[in-house]
Image (cartoon, rainbow, N blue to C red):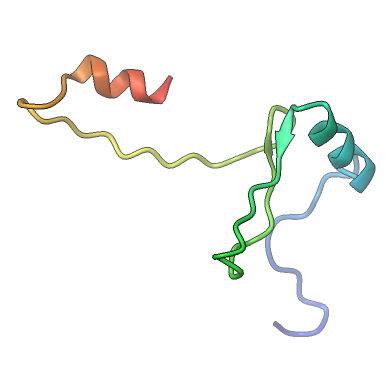
Length: 74
């Protein structure tokens, strides 16, 4: 990283450390962490935060139906 260069998205002004603490305390957000993955990027997942979700959808004629695959997303 070069000095003065920002990596990642800019935080909106309303996303403060206090706001994050309040959302986690209220159960509306989580901060996933795993001591076995120290390279993990800091993130928060919750109702008032934007999160990219990646879903791999596929079905097998033997083990699942389209309806079952769609249900996985809900």
